[in-house]
Amino acid sequence: MARIYTRSGDAGETGLADGTRIGKHQNLVEAIGDIDELNAHVGLIRADQPQADIDAQLAVIQHHLFDIGAQVAQFKDNPIKQRQVQQLEQWIDAFQAELTPIKQFILPAGNRIGSHVHLARSICRRAERHVWLAAEKHDIEIEVLHYLNRLSDYLFVLARALNKKQEVFWQQNQ
Image 1 (tube, rainbow, N blue to C red):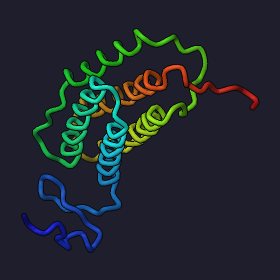
Image 2 (image 1 turned 180 degrees about the horizontal axis):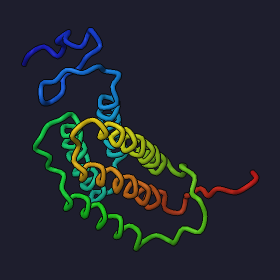
Image 3 (image 1 turned 180 degrees about the vertical axis):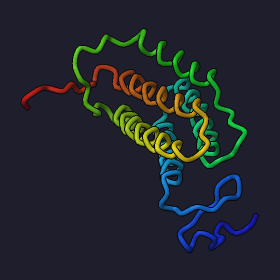
Image 4 (image 1 turned 30 degrees about the horizontal axis):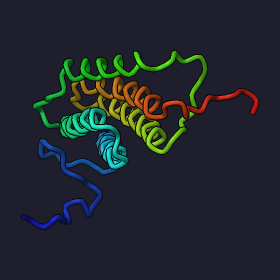
């Protein structure tokens, strides 16, 4: 294996999948970093050892996030299509069938794993915002943006499911 360090980024630039070099301060790099951070946080959730079916879903999501990171980095063979978005929707619907309807705002809290999922949801929202911003100047497939939007919904209902009866509800004028 080659050395992990290349020194090619020492001047404040990084390489994209298509070979282009851009400044590390650019929106596209911010979006790629957010996706990487989200993927790492999903790994942290998996380290909390959720039940096997949820872990399997999160494993699929981690692979999709890696694909999304590559596509945002201008790799042209985007494997994220509408069926991956629909898969998230199916998982969301299955969780929601088991949850009580929401009657008030839920705070990003609860038990440890539920709180980690809420944090992942907020990272996902940031990633989505930055990818939309980067898409103004770079070629990013719309399915990537749809996936990130739906993933934040998935993470919200997953946090609710994992928190079980430990959800924390917002109370006005506390």
